[in-house]
Length: 135
Image (cartoon, rainbow, N blue to C red; front, side, top):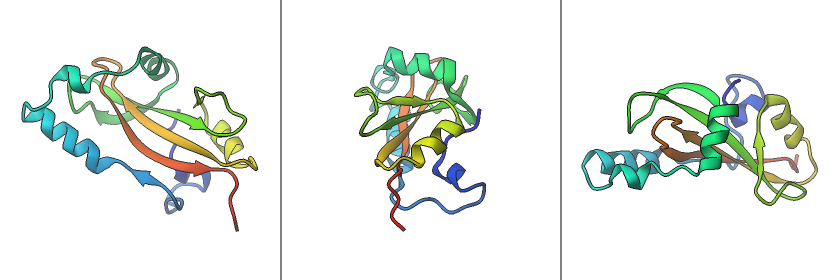
């Protein structure tokens, strides 16, 4: 399984889609605060059981080590929210599903979360819009 990034809709090496929001700076701040001792492991390793289940079963592997436990690699879990989707969102499990959602006339928002299945670290990596593209 590949990481579901907005670029996967256009092919490798394509520029990011308009409206993509990246949360790297927030992540860096949280990790720095943890390493300084200002946040405890309980503060940052609080993934919901359903998010952990999704990470273990359908998460996309990454090569990035967990910034908290440093014993496991984080996995990426993608969810889509929007009209005609379940209220709790839809977990995206394949690139084909992401492409199908991007072709819908209704606009949805995709959230990509990194999760450590070992220590329960989780952080929102990026968000981007799907579907209802205006040309």
